[in-house]
Image (cartoon, rainbow, N blue to C red; front, side):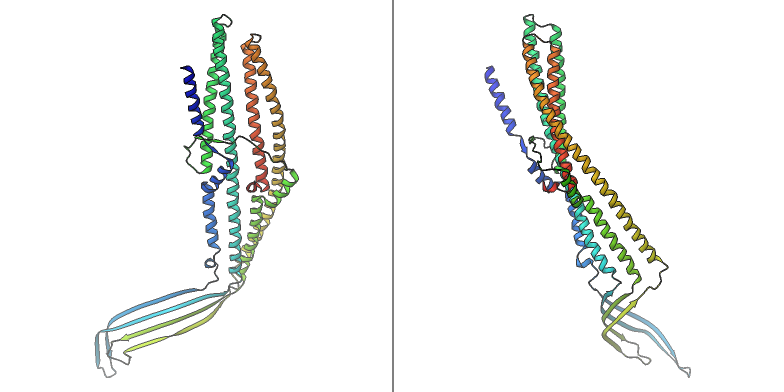
Length: 438
């Protein structure tokens, strides 16, 4: 019966494992690009910027308007002649109809329209860079969240293994006590360790579930879906070097590209402000129709009057002096450009600093990982030897527990270092502008 129960439990555990979805890094990347909310918002902002660069928002198209109207009047009139005779008219009605089609086109506005349109195109490029920044930040957050799930998965496995060892120790201590080889204190110590390991195991499960919910939030999917596993294998880049990373960063870093784009926009702002010194030339044209019907029977007037025809004209306006407002705006635009150039110099130096710091972090993380891997092997051998000696009664439970904790800590440290090194690698790729090519 006991063997039957073990078999049932074994198969149930297999079914539970099969029900766990394996979320690969590539699949997580695909989902986040399709469903992440920040990316969706940035796509909408890009659509707006594209609409702003349309010919319909350029000012190069003419404007047209249609006007029509109807007027009616009814008046009482009294006419008095030179001889004193008076003629009175009551309810004399007149009706007026009019309609016109007008066209207006700006021939020249001092190049304001031209530079505004170019600025809108550069604004679209800036918006696309901002969208790229959102994507890169999302991917960086995605990878950090993904590998945090992987780290906590290994943490949970290590805690579970430690708990199982402590349970076997408690069971063995109980058997030994029956034969007088262990004391009640040994049993109590073993029970305390089982309780502590149980608490740690439960805490590791809680942390893992929370990290999965955080990952789901980045993916843009239901945060309650936690029945999935992630890949825990990590492969590091073999061709990274600081000189290449710095060169790529100065050429492709998305934030530096935005700074450069801001300088281009400032140049256009200066040209736009200078257009205030230039004249404006407008072409106007209209075709109109007007008809009046007069029912007044007195005086010298026509019964109806109808007019229609084409009217065109060119107007020139030149604000020769505007009180210095244009001069002030041009000066301020130049100062803004100078400020952005200074900001670029500052950001470039900060970017160099960040690249060098990230490289040192990455290099140290890889070195620490190799050392801790060696440390794990040393602690495994130490625990195995201590375990054998403990079975023979040659070491105390305190020594056994110390070896057990040392092994657990070493395994946790190597797991942490493994993902810290990968995260440092992703940070380098983010700074160099190569994260999307990873």
